[in-house]
Length: 169
Image (cartoon, rainbow, N blue to C red; front, side):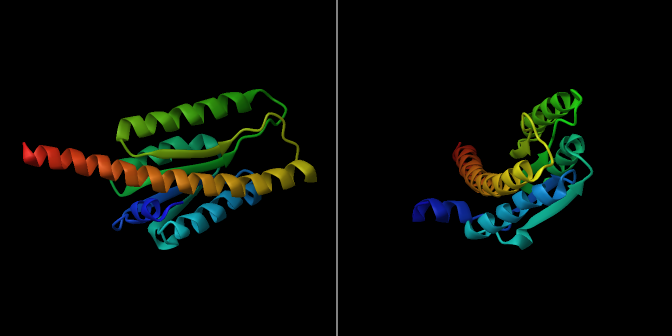
């Protein structure tokens, strides 16, 4: 990341981020939170500027995200979860509902919402899949942090420019 980009990302002026995670497969999903927090710190957002929320599953995340967004307290909201095929088709509906609802939250509230809610095609709790997703959530956490910090900074620039235009008019 270039120095000018880093300074634009790290100038968040006391804004806060909400990180919501589902607790199904918590040991895997925790990796996203850990990597997200570490990467955000590198981008100028210390852990003290991030509020963490745990929910039973991914299905509960969108409502929580909307309530948090409507408080006006958060510059961005990150959602993390693992929706797996437990042998019934329900996971497809849950995954689609969660992602669609998260998109709707950000459109309704104008607070960006980032998804690290993953739905593997086939997930089995044996060590190969567990280890793969344990590592993959570290990658997703870093990616979510980069997307969050960059988007929040870019939106702040757009909003500041819009306000300056209104003030000049």
